[in-house]
Figure 1 (cartoon, rainbow, N blue to C red):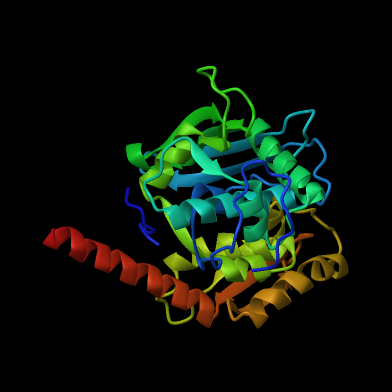
Figure 2: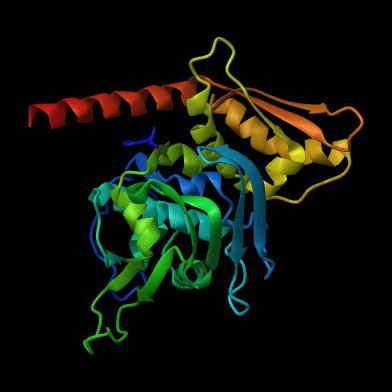
Length: 324
């Protein structure tokens, strides 16, 4: 089984992060390499107040061994709750930091909250420092259970495991396992997640576009469709179609029963993606004899350009390896 995705500044106030750097900050990079499972499977709640409810996604799939049932379960920590839209943005900022430093990467990953705030377009004050810290902790505290859902690239198989995206976070001033005091913040990535990054099981995203999208649903659609369009973009009329009820489980978002509410829910996210030319069209059509709708997407110029750039980078990497 092969991977089709092998490659891919606001003014800041004084930070409360004890390990923050001083001086001018470099311009924010455009590219972001995001781990593919995290794009196509739900992990973050799209509700502003995520609460403590978990996320479950089940699907019957056809694989080499025949028809199989995959199950994906996200279990938030009862104290920290579900990782929500802000934690989603923080995680992408972490991936953008890792992208800039280059893959492969290794544990631990040093970081400053000051730098993450810069990548999020926030002023690094006390409130923002607290929010970023809480978001990182909520991601670390969340467990996921995969039954044939998470693809481990290094082993070319879908795994049955319980794990976390982050294994440990040590903030500056806290004690390290060897008894020393940490001089900077250190993030230890989970084994499966780290292995996939280093196996280049990643999809390049335009981080500036991602950051400019205002609605959580638009950001999730950008992630999901960027992967799914790869399979259809060469067709004369490429499109991807979901049942609305299925889309609600994948993103995940609240499922409405009335057409007016469905249109209201998707109107702003669709408008953002159409305006950015990531989408050419986005249509909602009722399904006969069912209280459900088909949501159909066609890739726009921006989506096609991202796929072509990924393919060029793959080709250039293959040439470099052959000549080395």
